[in-house]
Length: 106
Image 1 (spheres, helix red, strand yellow):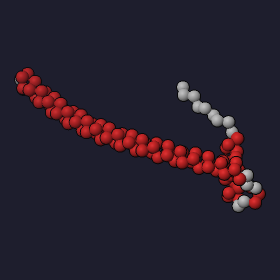
Image 2: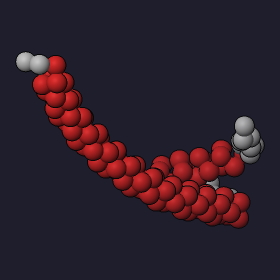
Image 3: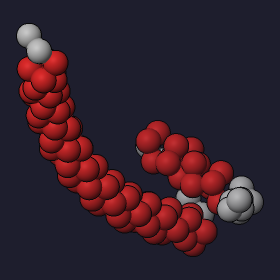
Image 4: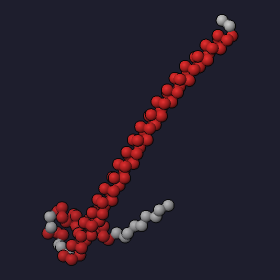
């Protein structure tokens, strides 16, 4: 074979390799797009969970305040209450005694 035929053969094999690599890159781009879409869905899900957590925390705080008011107004005798209620009210009393801890943002 002469030199030009060898060069043509090499160019053809390199062209085939370029096409194969280009197809592989296109596959990676599709995968990257799917991963980004999944990430966006997860971000939305986390945001919704954060909102649910905020609502639950607010409801819990309101319930704790209501129990604290009940305890303050009625001064119940904890020994005469059912065990679960006495434990709940005791926990509210203990929580109410703790100083408020302020979390500093770094």
